[in-house]
Length: 193
Image 1 (cartoon, one colour):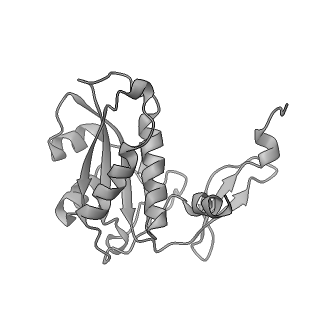
Image 2 (cartoon, rainbow, N blue to C red; image 1 turned 30 degrees about the vertical axis):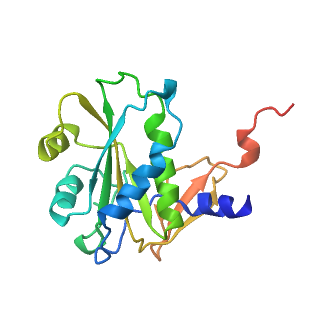
């Protein structure tokens, strides 16, 4: 259990990557395969995926994402720190109109798989969906649910306890270490029987 706990703790949202490290479609396909094995509401399995390790397509996807809303003085990674892979998670409305939490389960599983390979990623829901659908030629029967940016991390992240003021906003310190405040366990469990 300790090994798995460390894997979960190391899985922080990464926003700066080594753009010289090329991800390949095999790695991205392997991550989607992990998602294929996850739970699905009513076992409908309505999720579909677009994977990209092409610099040209990656640049298109990058242009549709909003990066780190809490970091007001940071507009996103510099070109040398752009992700080198993406997985776009789609819901196929010809299969179901309700995707429940399938995409969250799939995304977390893929990120854990990426961390186990020494990679890192970030889940995006702040997406210019109309632009992304147009750039990637995504059909009307597919709903864009999430985008995962992936690559080799070049930033350090750590977990802190939420301070007494309750501030949950992540931040970067003077050394550019990314701090992620988490609520204390005793504040989460309301009752134990």
